[in-house]
Image (cartoon, rainbow, N blue to C red; front, side):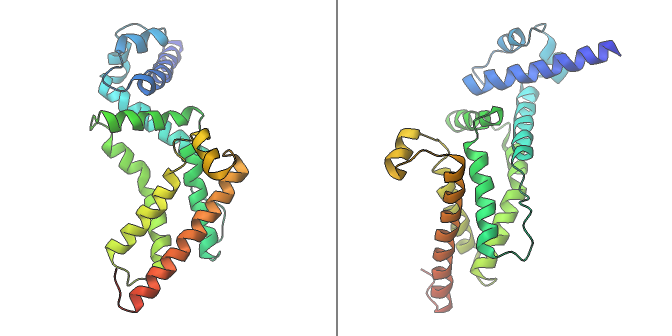
Length: 218
């Protein structure tokens, strides 16, 4: 029993160390030896507990994405018949909180930056699966706003627009944000921004729906 507990502790320490090293250096430049050293584990511990550096990397992504989703769950406690704009704002607020959080799950953003700069292809499925529930919720909200007759392209454009309004705060560059908003991003500001993005997006989608009903797809 003691050996099993010690083994789990070593595995947990390796994951914690790997979070730090992978987020600092990216996958390719993260030495297994450094991960083991930070975890105060034997150099062979990664292979013993995970099988390979590649599997460890995937487990780090799974861990961080799971932590982030537990910290900021998609469920907002809103009734299914709550106003559409309110439900959209709540969903956007969750997206913004996930994107701007700077606790340990915030390491996800640094990992994303490394993946964009030096793609590994190792975690594409992990990321896709983690995003899927949120993607489905957003798509349903957009379809409700645009109507069932909206084309897949129009719905895709709308989703792209909403997501990228949210991504504008992902970098959380205080100087840039202060220059535009005149204030820093705080919890209350983030909530108000979510309401604004929802209202702004709803207005745009209403216009698109109106133009589509008139036969103008542009």
